[in-house]
Length: 371
Image 1 (cartoon, one colour):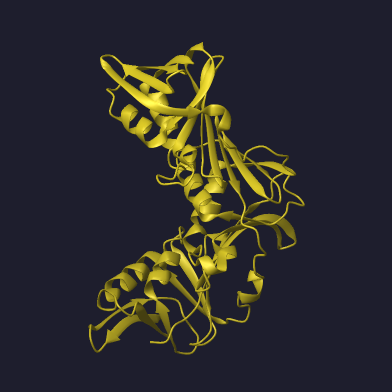
Image 2: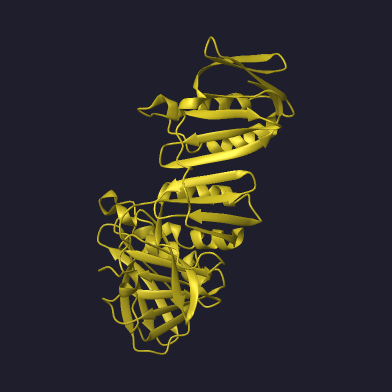
């Protein structure tokens, strides 16, 4: 194998694939990136046996072949090369070494055979559809903060992506919950997604997809089956195994009878909560006291002191006090993009429902806490 590639193009691809690689792994091959050279480009592959990234990058190939080398070492080498450098790769198969050079800088890396490199990308996909990158970004950003990190309830360790019905129309819905808060976002159901199985996309895959989508402005091609899901854009393919298990019936925990409605500027409420939370860092508790036209945000503890702030709001129901975890509350308020938040209450012990008044496609549920 022998090829030459421009440093910036190689660095971009390496930055994508090396994030998947675990630095310490019982299988040393999984610490490597697979480099395959053929025709007029190279393909980089990295996997941890549950998540895989593959990306094609143009290169001047003199001799085809494949090899694997340490992903992190290769990334650091290329990162530290001068901008605009032409990087030459050549394989010494007999010695099991990969020669990397740019100008007067020369490196020799240990290798392992490319033929032994595992893949999870193979296999038939039952459903394929295309979604605008912005829609996919919104589905992830509005829900990923609520993904559980509790490994004992592994089926909550991802985003539940599925076909649903809203106002008699079929839609694509993303849901995440950790038992304390629930986030739900919707997009129009793309052609090809009808009848898709409900799938739980793991937290690590969501994290990598978010990074990749930050660079993407076109469409995302999605392919999935009962066991795996692929996201494809440009020359890059991200494949992930799915979390096996049954996602709970989340619709049962969305309150439908909350009749006390608060309409308030989300940014102003968020600022007030953030201010009073300074004296409740240990308990994480804040109290919302609602009365006609007014909301008072307060916190108090014998050890840490007390604080309060108030702001005008639209509220015409009976007075009510509700305790909330301010960290969870701020997470939700950050998702209100349109300015005004609508918050529905029932009583001081019931879950509250938050919606963005400018975007009916998102909904959040937050459990109260005693204060």
